[in-house]
Image 1 (cartoon, one colour):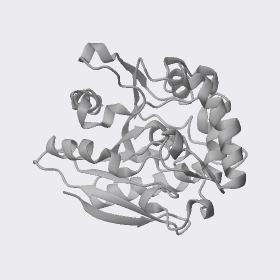
Image 2 (cartoon, rainbow, N blue to C red; image 1 turned 120 degrees about the vertical axis):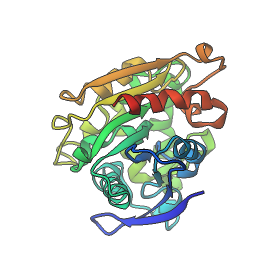
Image 3 (tube, rainbow, N blue to C red; image 1 turned 135 degrees about the horizontal axis):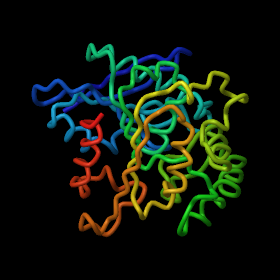
Length: 284
């Protein structure tokens, strides 16, 4: 079904990925799937397999400090989100392009996986971006119960668990894998203000490519997503002033679904939505 691959970042860190070869001849560019914060690459397996049936080569990978790219107890991991953009995403783009002999690739990023291109110096290798549930995650733009739980996670759970456990606890509240302290701290910082990764500029990031990027970016979000709200989606897209951007909003009832939220779009139960994502690539 897939080939296990690994590739080395500029700082020597080795990342683990999975390459899914296309199941029919087609001239499509390959697709890189970028995972959400704390979500392991296996979560996207069904979606990746479906894409191969549409004629795409597909690759998933785990960011450093997550899943197969975590080689020690999470409490000992020195990973940071800015490294995910500056190093991990850069290496994944290069590896997939080289493996498929492609000049460019498509990026389908889920949440954080679609929010970090502005930190990647090789952004010109990305033909188009589909940011699924991609947004700034600003706490000011959250909705529903997450509007109250988000600040509690960032301001109470993360500091307490980091002090006593040595990591930012997310697993017990259903927010993916427990996170390295650095990832949790930067996530809190990025979401406390608008703009997400631009909050790292001048602190941990000194090469900012947001304004240089002209890659078309489509943000696909759901009306019941309490994180990637319309406010937060717009807040992310405005950080790419020279890109052609578009927002696709999905209402669960329009597809006969009870919910879509922040996570469900990639689940097999929501396969009817996968064509919506693929259509954005075809348009690009």
